[in-house]
Image 1 (cartoon, helix red, strand yellow):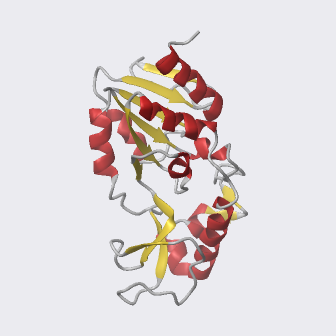
Image 2: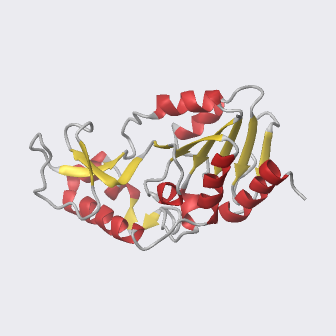
Length: 229
């Protein structure tokens, strides 16, 4: 069975109603990314950061997976599928996908401020004074800008094994995730679905589908599974 590795970004979840920092010039509900998604922001105002993610967690409960998520799940009937997602939502899980690597963390998890290995499920608010087992303040288990991405080496291995590498809804401008394209096998097929992609240079090997995630994924699914029209 052929292996497909799929890198997903904000674009696949935007159609479900998940807001992104790209929605309004880098703002999310008037918050700068530096204030709510960086170690500096955490040190400066923990209450603001916790409230930001508490609100995002509440929003997540109000949305559902879209057709793109479901089509990714359906690929599992025909391929060995591994999802590598930059998203912190659980929409891939709720669509039924089995193999999901959250390289930037998960909104429904929290961890110790001092030891990221002390991680717990989190479906409600995190408040100032909520402590991990080591006595430190709990924080969202999210990889913030400026922090190491501990699961990146795992993602590299998965990409290197793939026969098809698909990119859905990401600008490929966030590192180190964007570097994953450097680890594709020489004979692997590369498919990029993004309405705003600039058609970057990948040696002429990429198939570009300048569509939003749902329509673009439908086209890819039809070709891979149904053989196209």
